[in-house]
Length: 247
Picture 1 (cartoon, helix red, strand yellow):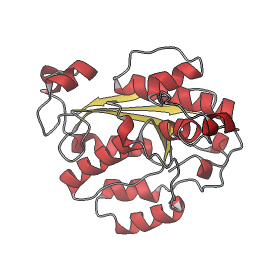
Picture 2 (cartoon, helix red, strand yellow):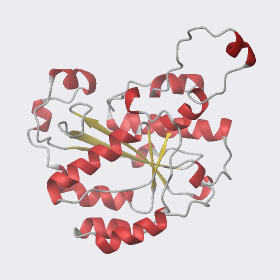
Picture 3 (tube, rainbow, N blue to C red):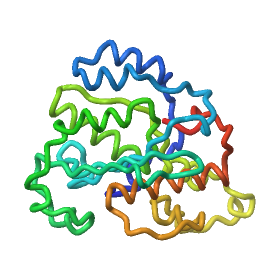
Picture 4 (cartoon, rainbow, N blue to C red):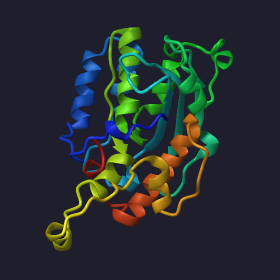
């Protein structure tokens, strides 16, 4: 993932929709059969304990950070629970973007023109991706990347976007470090402080998680899944309703 802290919603909160009801509405409205099947599979209600929620860590690599002009080049999905990230069941797709690769993006994620020459268009593997996503709540680090890029990609291909709930590990870190009330000492004697980074690697380090070589869709998805496990263990509970975590 090309992480961008500037995309984080500094409010740290969202007014989430009633996702089961929203999925039912979207299933009735969807024109594409693959999307209709995805929504018709349904989604858990917000009062479901997180331990009982089907989870799927998701990451996309892109040509840049602007979904209006950049495109997806790879997608990684990793099934997980609060106890296990199932790396052996991970799926990875290289997909041909409709815009040229930049030298910066090649440097970051290492995906080259030659690797993408024979890659399918995203629409050719969309059915497989949506079949795996069905019934799961996505786990991502910076939801604006995955949700907006997938939405833009589908609009360009099938004239329909996509909506789905996500648990954003960046947002969960932001709740702690961006919205923390100042102590009396800091209010009386304010000073400039270096903000705590809520990017993926520094967030993992705070929980003692191992360092990975990032910017591969499956590795980043796995790393995000492990981060959520640590966040639940240290700051929440297996019985926390998913509605308190998703957006």
